[in-house]
Length: 249
Image: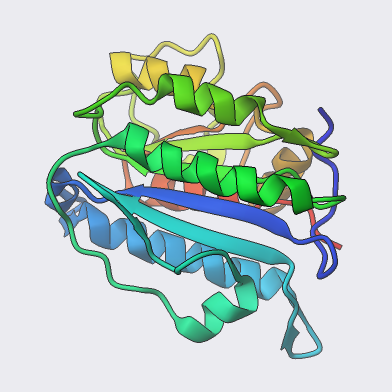
């Protein structure tokens, strides 16, 4: 699957964010609550999309965004899909944390949205789902739902699934410089069983995305998967940068 379609105002890219807001997201990372870091990184990624969509001072609708937050239930933060210029005018919402981690319920909402959207995708880039979590699900196993999502496709290729896993128990070594990190591959040694599961539920990084990531200063290799170990704020930011790395025209 090529994943080479360009995001334009006529063929916008659909990006769906699925954010874990369980109670553990209040735990600190680098001296700050994880949820605060995540929202800052998401805000920065959306600002980068605005920059990539701006010509002559006008923001073109090159991206379409949906944001779901999940805990024991699922919350549609933007009340549907919004264009990037609409998101820019609305500003970032504030998210609080709740209790459990019903990941399956979150992905069911994503699947429902994709079923509505895919018949109208046309020549737009394949949609991307960016899932951020900091722990294993507390309810049903989400794997069957995620695999159905990964089998969905449009003319540009299959739906891409990216996972940002906030944990310091994924890799044997710390990543001192995210810009020099080569990424997680199918052969990488992972020390966390849930990270291994998420790796199996992460798409391969398309070559077109790899090119954009390299232009952004990162060094991911061609066999990297769309799995980011959120050991630090810099790596979480890298994950959100990846979510918006659709090639544009």
